[in-house]
Length: 363
Image (cartoon, rainbow, N blue to C red; front, side, top):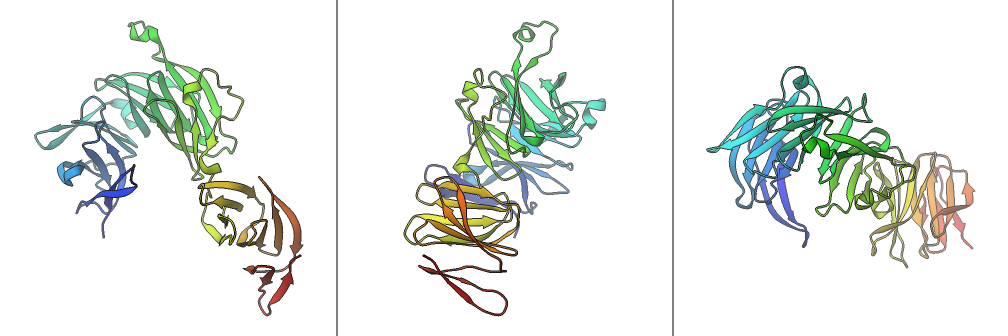
């Protein structure tokens, strides 16, 4: 089976439409039009087929082979017949004309050879395109107007998002910079269109690979390479201090790698998990929150939670550790130097080495 696109109703969380394209084995990028009536998708290599959909009718309006890697596709917020695509050596505007998509290069010469990592539409007919060298190109009416050298110059900008006051870029080591418009530029004076305002950094120093801002511009969502999602209070940008952590992780954070062990508490609405990221997490499945999270230096193989929810057994490569579950931490109570896989019982836990079964009574 090939790739498919599924549209969900956010309010009901139910599937609304599912459709496929015979020439797309998978889809690598997707975007709604500003009025949500149309959808643009990018197929997989090597054609990178751009498809313009009337998604409500599951109907293809037009399609064209881009024949170059596409990192991002987006509709112009002012005109549904205009679509932008960006990628390595690609910054192109497509216009729907009589059921055909016709492409126009936005930049030429040396600028066209850059690797574009992302783009975002700014208010008016302005497109901002970020590069792997930390620059932001400002394109107006299909022409390059200026290049902004950001604080990330020399390192890749992974994502860019425009908003009413300017734009925000983010990249490696959890860095995120905010740039504001220069009013003088709007009056036609020969100055830079944007200036640096503030730079923030996430404490876990993981790359930020995607940004999305709410419609009212109250919150900014940041997606990290560690599979974490954090909210940033962009509405309070004027009073936020750069030297303090302003990222608030959704659900207190998630595992950043595969989950290697899971157990459900009998008497409380708790689930305990351990993962290849060497973390243990205790979740409340009613509140859908992570109540306790703890990182370790060693690999974790298995986990079991006591029926009371007050104790957790964690299997390491060379030992089993029994922890007491506190309000926001796990406190080590006892260690058993064995290669084990814990098995839960109400008052007894079993250790299963290679050749025998050992039972321990808990008091």
